[in-house]
Length: 264
Length: 291
Image (cartoon, rainbow over all chains, first blue to last red; front, side, top):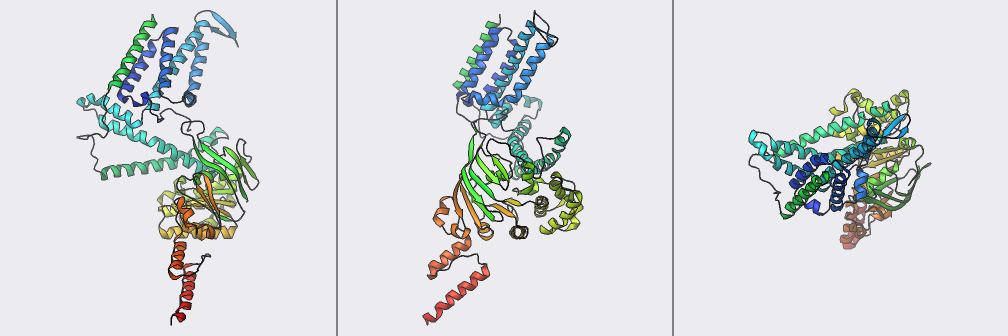
């Protein structure tokens, strides 16, 4: 469980770590959109180079990132194989178990799974290099204009930061309880599927009990400290866009311009 | 069951930026039937150590022998379920593991998983209830209706019902009131003697370690720092202070007393009463010479 890195922050002091979270979110949002504009080898290669270079800039070992994405590898490979067998464009390359594999399918398969890979890699860079609290702050300020139409931006951000804050706590709790139950003879790993599903009950019940208890304690602690919601609240951490952020966004704009250049 | 640690190391999340070595080349042995206290500052590796005792964690290097079981780095442990039946672990705040609708079902959960027959479970339940001092009237109630202290007793009963040969206790008294602490510790001592258990107690309380254990292992940053008889370990003030541990109050008192009255009293597991009488005798002896 601990090897899954989606949503996990890895502390370091790289350029990417220090970028303004709002800038990072905006760039990643744009990247997600623009990945779909790549339509030839050159444009895909361009985006891949950019994504891998960004990953290198984070100073997090690539091996670690690759290992952490392991649950997603399965999806990527699955997508590839699916495309390999269902697309029939171009010329027939080989016949396998009565299926014909077309050249178009190979290209399509590589393109789609590469696109998928790029999306996951780039978006996971956000969570790898940005603390959850920074992300929430950034989302809150980015959504601020919505306050005009009475959208509860602060409450939403609070809910987000609370749930993010409690993910590791609940993970720890899960591990603790599953160890306690394993010591009482529960087997989570082997046996028929039915037994393994039943083995989840002794895990889930205590987990829910403690989650509710925690929620109540947190609400009480917040009230005790006079929390009343977003109105008139100031911030401990002010987000400020500095030269570095403008430079990063400029570089990103150039990369996107390059993408459109290579596209034709 | 004899327990033997041979050069055991454990690293959490090896080969990652979060890699952290919790145990370093740990070697010691515990004789069957002894009561061992494992003491150390927070983060010294106590909890990691006990998770090796029933195969929840596998050493990243080294080997452990628990009775007839071999548990070592890089090899699958045979009969791990059997090992878990024989080594009962009471974790910190064990009441968090309760989940069944009734107390009876929760106590029966462990033994049932290990394939103990229903009749045998029925037979064991009154025994364990008596051991943890709970009334049989509670059996059909929900464990979530109970007070914290009672819930803990139910959870402990659930482990005892497995009829383990080795009992591992991870700070079993944390969060209990002083009287509850005393009761729980006395209960474990009684079980230890009555059933001939091998008991391993992880604790922050030097008092408990001194009072109950016949062997102490002190851990510091995952390494064995000291090991020996409590009465010999706990008089070494300076060595203990180096790893942020205190001398038990009784020992501190005896040391202060000896210094103040130029006496030579030593601690040999006396109760408060016995100690008071001894002191009384020592000081009385002095009186005639004063006259």
